[in-house]
Length: 200
Ligand code: GRF
Image (cartoon, rainbow, N blue to C red; front, side, top):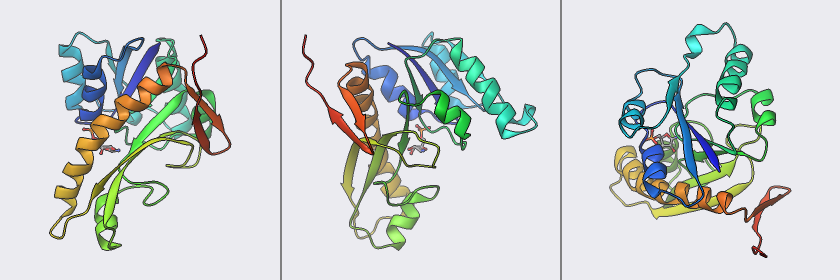
């Protein structure tokens, strides 16, 4: 299965996914909306195909997403992974990749969609926090959940220490979700994801 990974920065989730070397999955390309994304240099150094497409070069979100779709589709992806891709995607983009577009989000959804998830979890007094890998639907940070990982919130946590603890779990659940997808064992019904036995 061909996988295209979209990033905007550091790309540690992308690295975890590449290093997981999931059987049956090949990373066809790593694409960033920022040419200077650190993750892009790492991917290129691994010999992976990389590309960048700046949103600043397009007059509207619709125009950018159309160009991004065209670029992604040159790699014929079976799965598109948003791994720290910090852009809201148009409904047209989400529809085009429906059922083959997943995102990792640093909270236990449906709590704390959007940004600053760790600070908001601390302010809400949460005793657990975590991350979610989900299929992408047009509504931001919604869509059927594939895997979640939870961590405790400790008394003296700051947003930074909590983020670090959650990130370690992100690096486990993202490859897990992709492996589940690639093995063809996921089926979506309503907002729920089921794992079906592979009958060979
Ligand atoms: C991760 O916490 C991801 O969940 C969030 O942005 C961060 C990206 O980190 N959306 P990295 O680029 O994968 O290191």
